[in-house]
Length: 108
Image (cartoon, rainbow, N blue to C red):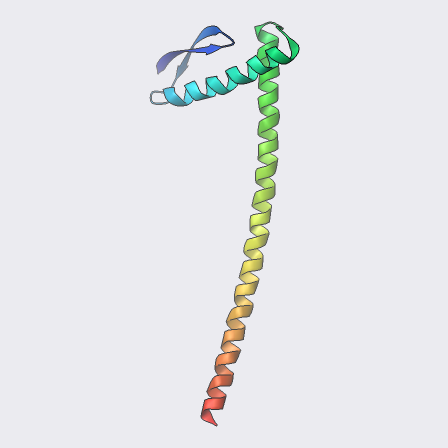
């Protein structure tokens, strides 16, 4: 397990992560740091615990919104796939009917 120092709101914190996940952890720390700094700018210094709590709640809110948008997009995709399948069946039937009519005309 790798040990890293990340910085949040100007303070260093030593954390562990799986080997190979260091870059990912740094990016997550940057996202959290931006959120905490924004909270600090908006409401002032509250202390690390409250700042971290507010930052985490705001990120959780964003995650909830993203999950809701993803669920809506997945539902829309399922609807479109179903519509596509119905159109595909109708097109195949139309082609089959046209082929039969052409064969009938050719036979006459």
